[in-house]
Amino acid sequence: MRLGNMGDRVAVNILNVTSDLSALAKMKWYEYVVVFLSGGTITVIAGLLAKEFGPAFGGLFLAFPAIFPASATLIEKHERENKQPAEITNNDRGREAAALDARGAEIGSIGLVCFAFVVWKLLPAWNAGLVFCAALGAWFLVSTVIWSVSESYRR
Image (cartoon, rainbow, N blue to C red; front, top):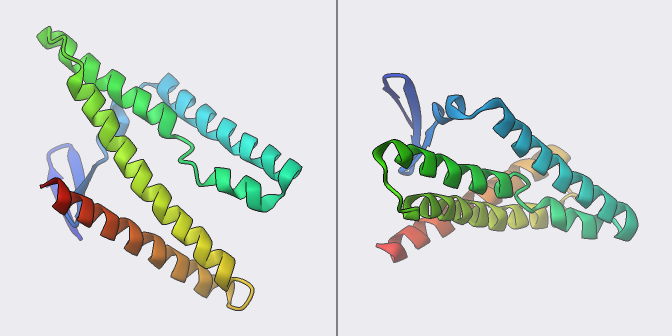
């Protein structure tokens, strides 16, 4: 892992995946409300489904990236707003940024399914702490491998 300081931006670089924490300061307060409300709504729906049809069924819906719908919309909106001062009307950049976010959510969701599978199979027989560590390792390994393979294929 490599930490870099780029002025007011701090980037974390792991396997060429970067995170720009300065983007959090660019969001408006009501955008945070939209993200939290959409995530909360999806979580409540999953809870209601679990109550009605059982925890295994409801748990499937918790694997859905709860904030993805809001974040994809906000990413596209921010990219569009960044182009307005330059009077650029092409919205391809916003759609591409949202598509990249969707790709990350998809890869992360597949990793979460692996996480859930490991917990489901090992929790009855193992210590909960060890199961969590094993599941976290499975999530990280699967997500990293899928990302690496998709990057190699894309090139």
